[in-house]
Length: 243
Image (cartoon, rainbow, N blue to C red; front, side):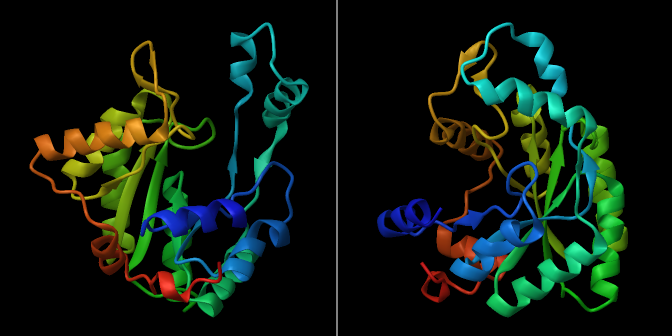
């Protein structure tokens, strides 16, 4: 990870958000270690536990490029992605100590309630940054109705927040566009969707970013510069990271 984020930092002023989601089966300590070590401006923080089901993809393939692929997908039929209140409290403590802004990944309405509790308990301060994640089996399906529900639920229970939207697979661009229309931000990339449009594989995440920028501009929305994004999110600045 250090090699990747250092290389990005050396070549451009982009805001780098590192993951604490980790891999299947990683411990809390392993997942949060990059925040403690690298003290990034921004890092993901999953706002609650969910069933994480990738196993339906097994039926789509008869051959596998790597031996681990089939086993990894299969194990998710009996897998809970754990993010307990104790985990969230300890994550928040680490984020506060490193002055790292958490990007709270919200897969379900209950995750908004979890964050409202963390605010009330004094573990985090508003405004917070939410990432509405739709289309993962075990979380809310990717639909305009579900996005509107999450957005309104957050407005009632959290009130003071910035938000972004991402969606899995073919729902990526339609749902992200709806997020833009609500005044939010959009996350696109190969982690969430392999295609640029129907039947057309994306060559890179950059190609998907270029597409969502075109959509935003057609809607009269000007993409933020890295420095504008830092001000919007209240980040500490690139000069205060440890990489």
